[in-house]
Image (cartoon, rainbow, N blue to C red; front, side):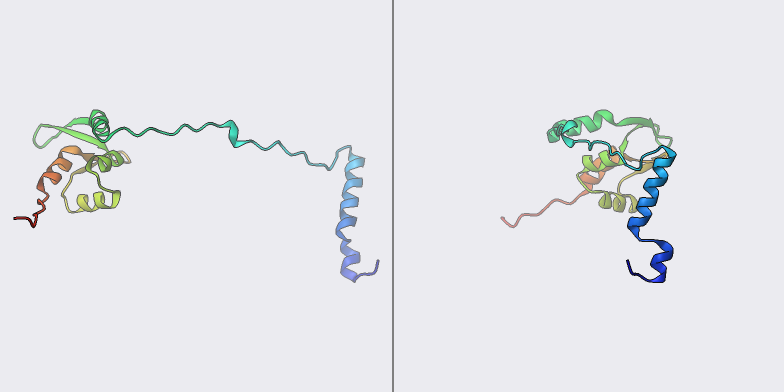
Length: 136
């Protein structure tokens, strides 16, 4: 084999592999790597979630709403997690944050969670203007 000076000093890849195999044999270990059998995705079963009807969904959200005593007016508040509040109000998270910033709906922090007051969502819906029809 003819090569450059660098090839002689470093050795070719096949020479390095041969030296490693010889070293491993003398040490009593093998250089073969065993691979674990791949896990099949067929083994895990995924069942689709059934979404409840709109009326049933609203009942579920209201049932999960925690009640909390309001310090200002001593009435109970229906608080739900942010995602459930958006689902109840039928708006997305961007719109929810916008309504909270403009103080159209009330939100509270409980630890790291944002809780939405369902009564304020109902008040927001009641304040929306009606659509006027053209038929007269």
